[in-house]
Length: 463
Ligand code: TRP
Image 1: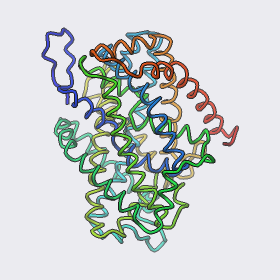
Image 2 (image 1 turned 180 degrees about the horizontal axis):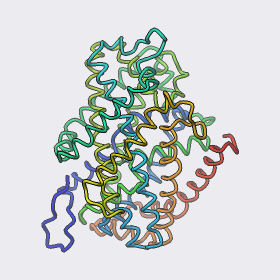
Image 3 (image 1 turned 30 degrees about the vertical axis):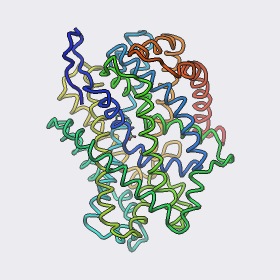
């Protein structure tokens, strides 16, 4: 992905070899379980059409402004998050530190979900599709049996984490990265096929309407917050990642165009995943599943595959590709944690890999057991996995995003970013929009949403 920059530049930081290389790498980091697993369940839970509408509005305003800022900060400083803020304004280095905590929380529970994907891949290899959709003697689905088991989720989590570390340890990330350029388009095509199939099932039309038609009664602080956090999560924003990617970016790349390409690509995949899953919720005759949360994909897809001709083959292919997309993201997440520990604690690579492993084990075990043996332990009504997701996405990321806006809007000033964008010799077409969003709209909205959601989490208000 990166190649040594052979120019006479004294800075020996490597660069992306091609313009499209950057977009693909950033899109590769963006596309993962966030699109395929998280987006559909959030859209289903928070009002379908209204969620989708808010998501798109936020993507072209917030998402755009933040991603441009992060990439430009990275390219300007040629440093990753902690160093970049420190270099531009030492008082703001805490933003880089806060941003760095996010991947450390996300990586372990990401591997837990990756483990669930592996479990389903294995189930379809071992059993026909109708058996994967069936319930056992106690009326539990395969998924319920999995997450309530004291050992199974741990085993699959360890498998997934093991795959991630193996790829990193034997140094074949680049090979995986290359392979993903072939497999990703196949995944997109497959999700599209499943979406079309799902929409043509009897009863699915209700779901298509729910997903595509915004209903004003679904407009709430909760919906805006979930759309915003999903946006950050899916585009890997507010966690320093895009600053790092920007730091490898050559001067001649047009940041504005690249950001649009990444956003469009990411959003189309998320949209298709929603279209594959939400109509099927209705077609399977169980709209109460809309509120299922993290388990949605694993409840609905087996039912869908069971009705499909060649469902088992499609399911194997589907879960294999999802596994692959998740693996490329988990590798990049794990690498991020390793480099944060290397930089922050001045450690060598191997001890940093080991240290990251221990963090993953602790947070991952808690997340694995949270729906089963540890189900009675909840914080603010949330199980461990939901709690880690909440802390990183609904608390830390909005805080980081807020300070990034203040930093860009009032400390280094929007012009610093605009100049950086235009340094590649093109005009920054939407600079007015960028300036207004980063200075006023984004920070104000984030504060309102964050305060409201915290009050709500602590039960002070209901929305
Ligand atoms: N955006 C990724 C997804 O949609 C998840 C993710 C968050 C990520 N932060 C990341 C991936 C950092 C790679 C690096 O699944």
